[in-house]
Amino acid sequence: MARLIRPLANLHEQLRRLPGIGSKTALRLAYHIINMPAEDVQRLAAALVEAKTKVCLCRTCYNLSDTPECSICADPARDKSTICVVEQPQDVMAMERSRGYKGLYHVLHGALSPLDGIGPDNLRIKELLRRLQQGEVKEVILATNSNVEGEATAAYLAQLLKPLGVVTSRIAHGLPVGGDLEYADELTLARALENRLRL
Image (tube, rainbow, N blue to C red):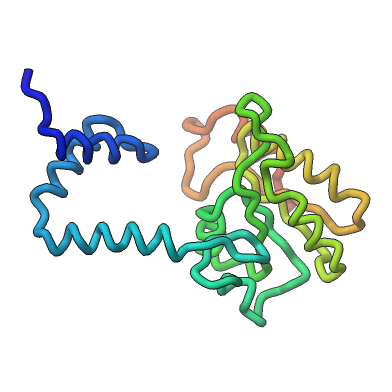
């Protein structure tokens, strides 16, 4: 069986380390990169280095930014009385795509997962509490994922925030628009019933 030449094998190995990229996809990408014009490869490499060196965390909400404070926190038009707590920076982008939320965010950078050794001290929970002590925030929306870790994190935060006197809410979970009941899992159906609206 033929083995990959060393530079191609190294590229394959690095690509394979990316999340969601299996060995076959990594090999396909490696061959694609090898066949790209040299200028395109240099632009790709430069983009990777620039992203790694210039992207930092916002000092307020811990979202990704290329300035000390992200554009959302710096926007005077945002509602500073509401904070939406999410697990990861990509969750901020998902919420922003909805165009329905005009408040601020707080990114935890994970969710509670004792089996993986992730406890409260591994998340940006202290920083959230510090923000709430300033007294400007009236509501915290918990928008963690609807899985075991996300639910545990939301429950933990709800208990932690209760004595602070801020309204704490949880995003609703249920059936997606256009979804069929027959394809929904039991937990999604249970949530849809639990969060039903009176007409």
